[in-house]
Image (tube, rainbow over the protein chains, first blue to last red):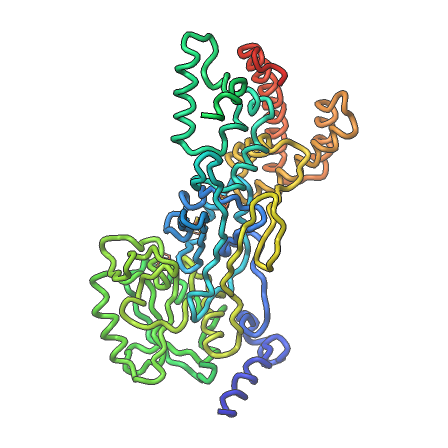
Length: 205
Length: 277
Ligand code: SF4
Ligand code: SF4
Ligand code: SF4
C-alpha cells in the first residue's frame, strides 16, 4: 500500500497558504489538520484532575451531571478512587466551579478523539484514614483531614478538642460523647468541652 | 486504518439533540471543508465506507442503526461516534428512553452506553457537541494524518506526610498563599457570583498578591496600604468587571477579618475553660 501512503504524504505537504493559487482564490479554509493549532484560552476543553492538590472530597462527583466523575469505594483495601472519563464529560465546568482546592483544572485540550475508550480514563487513588480506636477505615481521606486542619483556626480546634476526635468513626464519637454526658451531668459547660481534660481516664476504658 | 483514501460517509442520527448534527454540517462548510480530505456525504448506507453516528441510541433508533450498519459494504465498515452521547450515552445516559444493556447501566469504568451497544465503534469523538476541529481531528486520525494524543492516567495520591517512591505517586501540596486558607475559600466562593468561574482565579491571584504586599510593606496599617495598591492596580487595568471585582474583594476581605476577630473573642468569652489554650 505504498501508493496510499504517498497520498497521505501529499496531503500533509499541501499548505494552502503557501500555494499562491489557493491563497488568492480560497483563503477562507482553515489549514487545520495539516498544522497544529491551539484553541483560545476560554475554550472549554476536557478538565484535568491535578493529583497534587486533590483531596478526594467528592464535591465534583456530586456536581457532575452526566456522571463522568465517579467515586469508587474500596473499604477493604482502604482506598477510594476518583475516576474521570472524558467519553462522558459534557464540559460544563461545574466540577471546576465547586472544587474546594482548585485541583480540577480547566484546559483547552480538544484533541481527544481516540479509537480506544481506555485512553479517556483518568484515575486518582486516595488512601482512606482509619479509626485510631477500632482500626476501621473512615469515609474520608488523610488529605481531607490535613485540609481541614489548614482551614479551621487553631483556636477552634483547641476549644472543641477536635484533634482527639477527628480520626474516630461516627459510632466511637457518639459513644464517647454519651459517656462524657453521663459523667458530667449538671455541668455548666457542654460535654465536648470536657473531653480534653478527662482524656487520660477516658482512653483506658 | 491508516490506509484509507477517499471515504464516503453516511450520517445517521440515533436520537441526538441536533447539536452534533449541526457540527457535522459545520465541518462540511467551506471554512472547515471536510471534503478536501476526500470525505463525501452519501445519501445511502450501501455506498458508504464510514458511518457517522450522533446521539445516545434511543430505543426507537436502535433497529434502524443496526440496519444501516448491516447495509454497508462489509469492508471497511468503519463507525465513527460523534459527540459525547454517541461515545457513552452522554448527559442522557440513564434515561428510560435509551437502549443500554451494560451491566451497571453506564456507571462502569468505561461508561458504556450509546451506539456501542449495537455496533462496534472504531473512533470516538467526545464533546457536547464536539467543535468542528475536534471532528476534523477524529477524521484526520482515521485517515492517518494526525496521531493519537490521549492516554489513560492512573495517579496514586499519597497521604500528607509520605514521599513518592514510584512514578505515578504524587505528593500532597497545599499552595502557599499570603492569606489563610479559609479566607481564600470564602473569597473564591463569593467572587464566583461577581465574575464567574473563568476569571475568578486570575482576579483572586492578583488580589492576594496585593494583600501579601500590603502586609509586607505596611504591617501597622495594611488597610490603607491595600487601598492604595488597589487604586494603583486600577490605573493599569482596563476591564471594568475586574475593577468591580477588586473593590468587592477588598470590602469582603476586611469584613472577613473583622468577623473572624469577633468570633474569636466571643468564643473565648463563652468558653473561658479553654481560653488561650
Ligand atoms: S472536588 Fe476537587 S479536591 Fe474534591 S475530589 Fe474533586 S477534584 Fe478532588
Ligand atoms: S466538566 Fe461537567 S461533565 Fe465534565 S467532569 Fe466536570 S462536571 Fe462532569
Ligand atoms: S453530545 Fe451533546 S450536542 Fe451532541 S447530541 Fe448529545 S447532548 Fe446533543
